[in-house]
Length: 85
Image 1 (tube, helix red, strand yellow):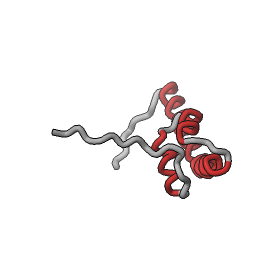
Image 2 (image 1 turned 60 degrees about the vertical axis):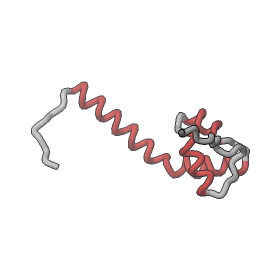
Image 3 (image 1 turned 90 degrees about the vertical axis):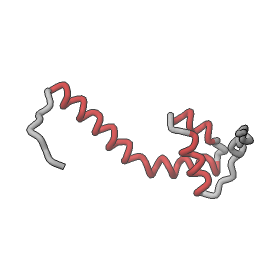
Image 4 (image 1 turned 180 degrees about the vertical axis):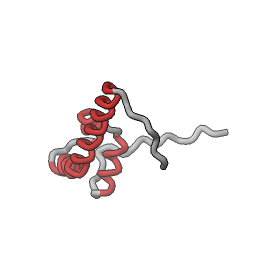
């Protein structure tokens, strides 16, 4: 990818730096968060919904973690029959 001669304004540079810092911080806690979520589901009875509400992450993220760790979900996902013609 080619680079341009773009130089952000001070306020833009500050905002971009804040966003990068947030992404870096999120990356730094990714693995500890996964391990903690599995531990809490396995040992403390946390549900996918509990973890989703507490973190703001999607329930599906925690469902996938639980499946990968061999944790039985308290309530299986709802599967509705197809209403196709």
